[in-house]
Image (tube, rainbow, N blue to C red):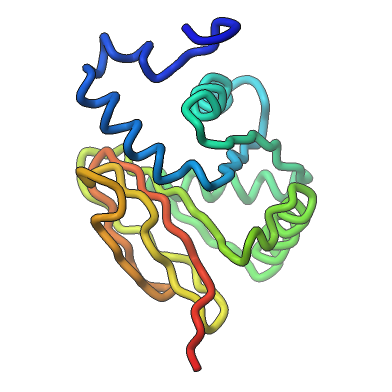
Length: 190
């Protein structure tokens, strides 16, 4: 345990082994210049809140500036996110133009409220695949002149070995049981 009893990466040595802890530390170094903001709909109850309660402290203690924000929205917004959640679990989804507008407006309001709307001109997205098979994610479309680049992929032996650049709307394959952080940076198309 670290200062004030906060968990450190080394506390997981007995479970993951020293080689894995060193591998994680190498990946952390690639992210230390970033500020990661976890966004969740609640600060207590549910698996995500329980996970973020300790994960945000561990990330900060590991050298990654990390925050935890609670998303604000009305009942219409949260009924839409529940439908999205169910769709990710294999359910069907049909979002009308009105529902998409509600969703986009609330997301924009929260981005402004949390100072996430234009951080250094880049947009970061974390993709998590907890399944035992590779999954494809369709990357969000961005304005002209922007493309997605892999910043970190947990399946890489060392950070930065897989440089993938894709335009929005294209599929990105994420290996089984892995995490990728991708960035959408401005590129000059002139």
